[in-house]
Length: 632
Image 1: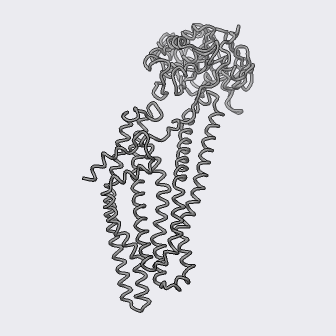
Image 2: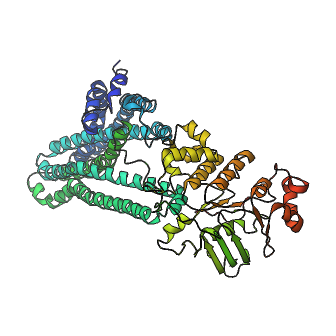
Image 3: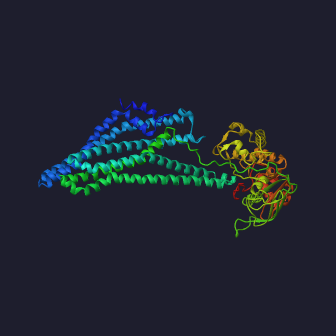
């Protein structure tokens, strides 16, 4: 059957390689289905007959019936017009049935095209956006874009067919009433159509540019929203903001260009559909003087108002918006639309430390003098009057109940928080909230300390990119692949590195477990040139053995001062000294000393693993995380 053959022919829709554009593809698709088109044309004749009689019967009912005093003739012509409406409705119903034989083969061809691309047939198995995004794209195309293409194509065919046959019926009716009427109606109609057709290509280009700009904004904002933490950590707020602003400006320019051509289209509708009515009314005395009857004038106005103007408006609306949308969707379903870079602006790692070597301080590495901090002017201090010295190369564990201020202390040492009073020094340099005041400011501060929070962040890219995040890109501090492998083995990342295929394999942060993300962050800190390392429960998602391996790696790292926010007793036992935080009653000493001196520490150690704190199966009482999350 003719309707089954298109299924095979339909596969050429959107084939790769040099080929005509979507409009030419559509024409070819229609030409291959001539029998279906002939059926549509046959049933559409009934619609054109309805249009013809809508004006002609009205003219005859007036001239030969009501105005001539013969009411029966007038009613008979009106009855004939009503019968034509019924026949036209029947024809419209048959048209919709014939449309299924034209539209469904297009849908089937597009579905086959999407499935072929999704399973890696044509196009070499490329998926948009890389990684795992291709499956989502394929589902979107199958469930949404294919239906858009089918419905839009059906609408375009119906509207175009309707305009052709309605215009034919109206023009034949005008000629039948009085040929001179065409001299008034036809020129503006042709001029309006020509003006509209002239806008099709530029309007389609600007419609597609607007759609792409809108999609770019959506992708950019989605990437920015999901990567806010990476942006802040990399200090990339300004370039990301500029990039997002550029994309918004691009959409604004595309919208203005589209609006300008939209004005031209409105003018085309006015010239082609409304100007003939005005001309007909203005020329009425002249037409009546040339033998045109009153009924013929009324019939001509009926043709214009009830048939030609609505059909013209529907055609311009459908071709103007639906045609552009169909062209865009078909190109994308065929895999020929530009990819546009995929996912918005790249969130690159922040500025590298300019010098890979940091002068190792003598003593102490971290100093706090009478430090007080509160989250708000009237809030109670979280840290009050704290004095603390951590010698260079020292290993300090910080313990205390949940919410006591352990993460706050880490933020103060890292320079992320500024004390209300007192002074914080790192490697002998004063810290003033986010900047260590020395030479190159914030960049130098990044070289002095590294803070790994409980929720480690990993950005999309290669594993090597993540590991070199805090390292210089060139010079003495640049890290080789061998150093990356050594760091991975030291902190326990070697298993993950082997599993994903080496340091240059891509990592998907969403596909990693919390423990795997922590291992990457630990290896990144291990490779950094910073002499002071702060682990703010950075191993809480690791098992005790993995945690011990990572902490011992940092303890053996040359020139490293290690401060650990502890959540297991083993972390406190491994440390040289332990700081017990309890508001103003802070105590610092060795594990054995604190068991005798600090009731709070005895309680915490008991909650870890029984009397004496020798066990390691439990966690610090209340550990986890009511302290504000802090990320470097």
